[in-house]
Image 1 (cartoon, rainbow, N blue to C red):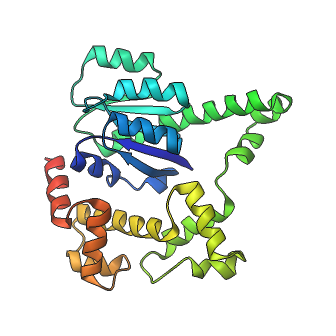
Image 2: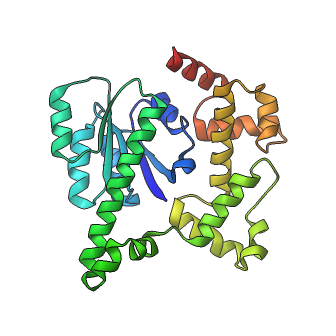
Image 3: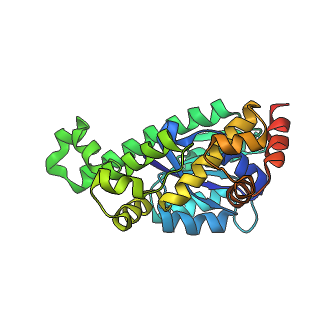
Length: 262
């Protein structure tokens, strides 16, 4: 699984990008969000993402400077989003090895294609790093078997994520997996947080909110029926969780995605 950091100073745009696609479908997880370049740089150093998606024009520190300084600390793939199709900015991005340079307004298929390119670059970076650390295994690494063993997401975390994807409309908790995986809830939560940056319950709620926004965008049902369809029996609780993770109301997101499609 590829860890993604989103850095964008405009809250609604950042949230719009976060909830625009089903990241898990593309073997990605958004581990954190940066509010500006300086905040993004701190989170690059703290969370060590595989892919950084960033705006260019931000207060305190711009996206180009953030990437440049971040690469001095840690290797990652990057996607730049700009409101301007400027050659000079694109040139600087290329010099930094940026995978994609996208221009707003951003379409979902553009983001998905850029993600695939960024993932391919991350795989190359991982392979190079492993070859450097295990020169005696070079041939096996080239054949990818060793690479998969070294970079694979924990099998327990993969099973937990799959469980959420299959059962999120139901009443579920991490305790449902304790007997199946023969591990304590505490250990599973620690392992899950290490791989995803979230506790199991945080991930479950975020995934449900992602699904609710997908349904809102598709125009599938009223808000209160959507809440029930994604596993919330209490409508008021759903609204509070939606505001917590989406930083807005369902109606605000309907307005945002409606404007985006125009």
